[in-house]
Length: 366
Image 1 (spheres, rainbow, N blue to C red):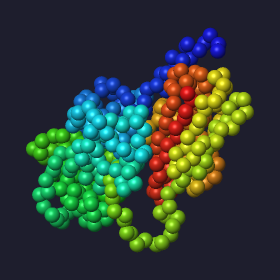
Image 2: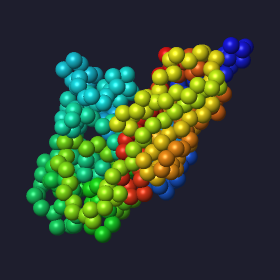
Image 3: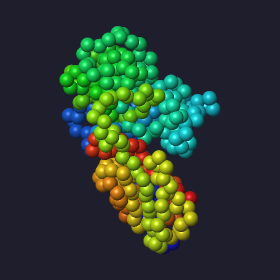
């Protein structure tokens, strides 16, 4: 090790050790203009330490919110108790060391979120508008006011288990639908829209009515995808499998300065790298990822905000942005071990037809 390591370690900690979802409540977001439709709601929730931004002073309002972050924000907003043995769950896809684990346990125990029939929580899946309706109804015990709705014209497109909750959300004044009297139940919820949804639910009904300025939901709300045990949709489309098959990550590699190429252990779009055997002075110099079709890779949770975002991938072999980031750091393996330790980058692959697949890249260095 050279004598510059202590200084470099400080710099690396500054880049890596702060999760990509933290920022102090009083920070001003550079990407939220004064006239942004959700500025007031975002600032209120930031001040209440319910929702946070990114280390680069951005909020990324148009990014989708995923199930893990939604569970975390509901836990903060509702001030749920600390988890106990009784609140723990046995989801097969939840890392017990993840930042969102307690929130998953608590919101599941509270009946807000559920898993699917495969005992999976799907923490990195984006929250859809139909799912948002259901978790809001559960979170705030909203009672149905009517069984039917004559305003929103596309409720039948929602999964049956969500339809009544969308109607309930509408009658409680928490949504007006998007343009053309459509709710768009299958659309994802953005971070800005989630802030508006949650802020409306947290305020009194009178406050919500007073604050209503008539803007549609396409300017006022959005969140992340977290489907519970939804029944499969039976849409009789064209039958073109290319329109419905999501992209997949089939393999990935990292190459070291010593010339070793490490292939990820790939299973269900989880690409796990084991770097524990590497010499401490070795470095990552490059990496690749193979995908089944043209798609966009975007990380919603990563150990740094400096990853290339989003990354356009072509069918076949592409540069792996996580490996390129480690290469650009010019840091040896020991330095990464000291400053960060094991980490996981989580996000989504989305093709041109909007089909989306959760992806995660765990990297073990110690």
